Figure (cartoon, rainbow, N blue to C red):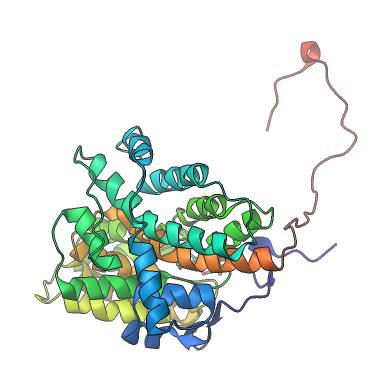
Length: 381
Ligand code: CMC
């Protein structure tokens, strides 16, 4: 019997210098820099540059990067037409995945190792994802998509395209830091999915659309949306013990808790908790934040010793909810941030490529006879 690791848990699948995580100590670094330092001092686009090019940009490099991105925010009217043709009740992650795959048809990319092509592709993807997310959010309500504004910062422009209003600068800052915290996280499911696609030398648009599909699931990025549904279902402080104990007794997952790597509280959740608290200024006794704090306390008393603690998705949804963003846009916003990490890993993969082709342990039968259609009996399980 060969060794078998379900979910490839603990199996290194690549060498990387993009980020580092220590799950026992709760440390996350991007290119060697602690996320707490980036959250305090950096901007999302500066962090994106760091992830992609392995160093913090100079003032001039950052100016050029910002300019290149703001000049490429517009999407072609045929992408808008594509978004208009999708069912309005469909999930925005599916719309985003479809639109990103379609972008690849408008910008065919064959020279995946060419540096200039890579730069342009990265800039286009980072620039256009927010425009696609905001456009679908408006088109599905019957509103026109709002043109991006080159004079606004990345986060300011996204919030403007959602609401047609210039957002409050303090909210822009919080939103931008949330993007920094979501930008990268080592070898997670969506990054791996993107890398598998990159290993076939498929173009970056195809790589990113694979990763978006993987991020959607509730065990991964979809958890931020599921947390809000859970808190709304719990509805009041008094319901918390019964609700959580029932879930734990039935071995059901409590959304926003647990992590394959972290056995302490996710360092990203700690920063986001601070923002969620800041936004919950009125301390409403039934606010989502109040409920979340009580859920965390109850979970700690029940499963804290097993290392099941809040992850990045637990408080992020509460922040976006407070900002008035629709719940099903939380995971697309995660993708807008994570596209930077996905691209950094994708480029590493192209550089040192080895086609992913793992093995399996076959457990099926051999030498089965081919039964003719006329004599086949109904199949019983
Ligand atoms: N609620 C209740 N029990 C849990 C949870 C949870 N959220 N997470 C893990 N456990 C228990 C699980 O029941 C199992 O118990 P036992 O040993 O008694 O059988 C044990 O902990 C190990 O669980 P596992 O599912 O084998 O562990 P994993 O490393 O595969 O889990 C996880 C990682 C993220 C899939 C899981 O914790 C989970 O499903 N959490 C809820 C969904 C979620 O919040 N996902 C976001 C993850 S972080 C950000 C991101 O990737 O997007």
